[in-house]
Length: 118
Image (spheres, rainbow, N blue to C red):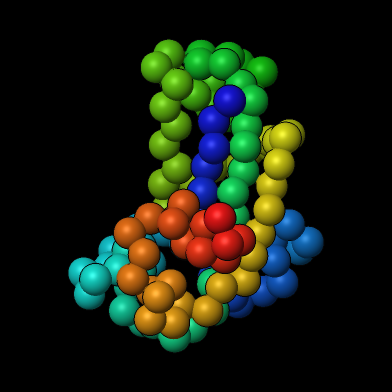
């Protein structure tokens, strides 16, 4: 089982309904005490947690014929991304304002935990 945290811009309805723009490395390149680019300070973003059950090197969860998780259980999701279909055991999105507390996070997991109070 693997857990992926990711973020989307607040430019569309939450992507689990109709699509949102995935935040890439230029959005998550913060140097101002945040993981976020400074253009997102005091703006809303969506943060998601997805838990995936798949074994390393398992073609049952794959991008084409390449397993999503490599032989060591790692996955790489880049700016351009890849079209994949995942059946997850949980997927949960939260709209979060990047106020002083939320902007200062060091990971998407921390942002998700702030959003859920965990």
